[in-house]
Amino acid sequence: MKRQDYTAEHHALLLGLFGKTLEERYGEYGLDVLANGIIRYGHQRGRRMRERAVRDGRRLDYETFLAYGELRISSGPEDYSTKQESPVYVNCCHRCMWQEGWAKYGLERYGEPYCRYVDISLVQGFNPDMVMITKTAIGLGDDCCTFVNVGYEQTEESRKRIAAVKEELAGRYTKDFLYHSGHLLAALRDTTADIFGAETGDRTAEQTAGAFEKYLDSGAAAELLAEASLDFDRI
Image 1 (cartoon, rainbow, N blue to C red):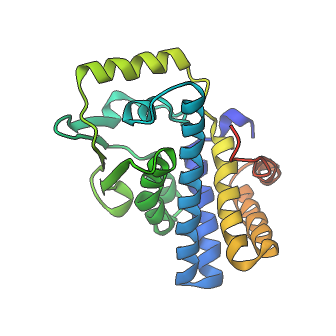
Image 2 (spheres, rainbow, N blue to C red):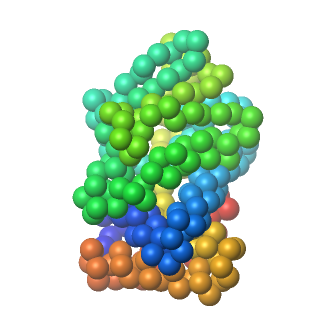
């Protein structure tokens, strides 16, 4: 596969396959390990955003957080809506490409901890004093994903400031889904290694990459494992 061919669906597939492997080996405890790996992944992403923002002289607030995201994803205006702007900004996602991926491959069970933990971990990695609450999630059986941005009231002026920063950045901090998939695999591997040892972490990552390749073109496992060798704490 080419880098540009990787999508949120592949990211979701990888997560599901790693979770399935952990559950088959360790039962319910394997799902706890999966959740810890997701939290690690979210924290690392948030910290990278933080480091870039600090380097650029930005405030570590919600406006910067909303402008400095790493995801590069195609979506339409119908996929998101604003539930309220005041006294706290609450936004809704009506289409989850991750949930579509889990449903396609019958891996919805392993998406649940991602829905519960990834966004709050991302925000806390960016700034431990900030909190985002996932009130509802499509992956948990709800109609939409609802995010409460605690402490942030959105105004016309703040929307303009966020748009201006995004325009200035011009997408230079966003990453493709091969990068994000490699990062996810690395975070899950390293968390597994912390608990069960490096050999088990590596073996689980290799097994998952092999299972992933069966759904896609030959060579995908090697691509994923190579990407997972990057240092995801660096920007």
